[in-house]
Length: 175
Image (cartoon, rainbow, N blue to C red; front, side, top):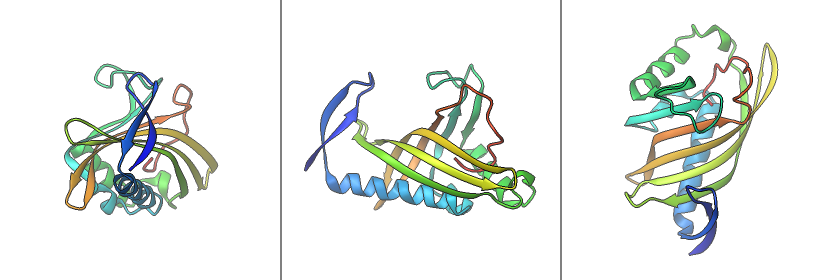
């Protein structure tokens, strides 16, 4: 066992004992999810989600209510599938040709919740190169994971763009 610093709901630092094996498994899952996005392997990425999943990218802050305020993306499981089908259709002209994407995932924090699910928090830097030029995206991410067999499935992914209070270039890839 190792001691890992994790953030509590109130953003105060607390110490929590986390099994290094769990930390490694979660980290590998998050790295795989990032690779699938970068490699445009949309069907495999979609398979990482539970049936009751939520994929949320808030606009104008991180603490908004997505049911009452505008979001960049607020997808349920059905909408995630539709987004993947659109990306696979070849008719998403903002992604023809597809952007070259490379992301770095860091600052992984893992916390087991009382209900058996796992919360993982990460930071990511995403470099996108396409015909428009180059763009650097910075995000803070929260994942809610459920164990499924020897791995996990995402039941929620929240991606907070660090500049989500400003006008944002076309976000036409999976972030």
